[in-house]
Image 1: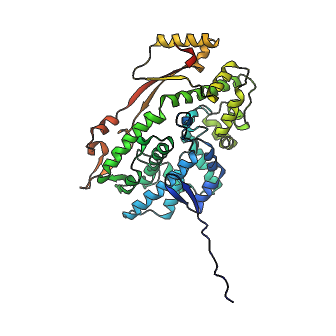
Image 2: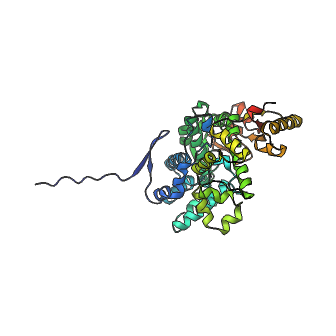
Image 3: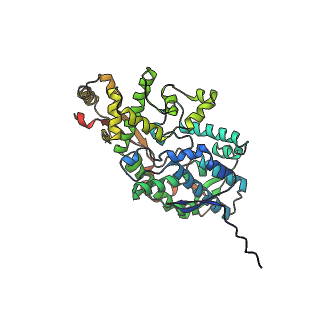
Length: 417
């Protein structure tokens, strides 16, 4: 009698991504990082904050984006290897970890609540703290990833793949955000751009035949900013959420009893900054337990709070009664703003000083391409390396490199001026 043939099952993990199809998750340290609770938390943080209130499909998470960026990093590394550039397996693993963790410091609703839960400490600083904490947990095995992340490793192109004006982070979020919002103008030629990558003088470059794809990428980025990321209604929702947290924090610091999840309560009743995170190691773990669910659960409860300002703000967000929003190329007249604030004070029966929770004015700026930062370098056929600005035949690239400033103004719709 012959024994049945032994069947070996493939234990490699795969994720079915709607953008790229099946993504293989490398085993070893990369897999262990993804499985860690710090990284799994990214499943509970919206990539685009409250953008889903304008584009209902925009409900993808930081987890989606990080995995997609890892996939593109591996594609880029394979492209560079095929062109003769030496990238060891250790460097590959470190680069994958660096891109996986590049935004792990984001708090609830991503950019929306930056500096509103913790103070004077942005997600980049928090990401670095998470890097070092994970490096301790994994006994120093993230040393090379940290070196790439902080741009202290001698192969500069690896850091440029993680963070530059043409990194895999941007390549993924443009394509992913375009897909989930349905804004087709954000589609850039991601696959072709990656196939056109090369290294010259230690820096990441794009071969000259990929210039048109880079032009499309820059144009797509500008369009996505003004149609999605800086859409006036998205901004009004985000500023409303910020206003809710500011009011809740003010009440909490004045001793008012507020419902909140344990993690959120810690940050509502204490004004933590950079030094606190350095001196209190447990604080990072508390922050790591904080996600979108903490904020939404609290806001739903605050709808019935006795403070009329907090309850009104929360009710407006939960019921999507968003403030009216206007974008202007010039600042609004200060007299008009004061008139609106007086009207809001009468409308809600509040002090003039409290209208700051209902009326918002900010100036917003955007560069589609900033020539003063780490440039997008084009490798010409003659071997010379030039900035995209000097190679592109499109007049619009010069135009898009300029800073665009707009003035944002928000006020309650039921208090029209």
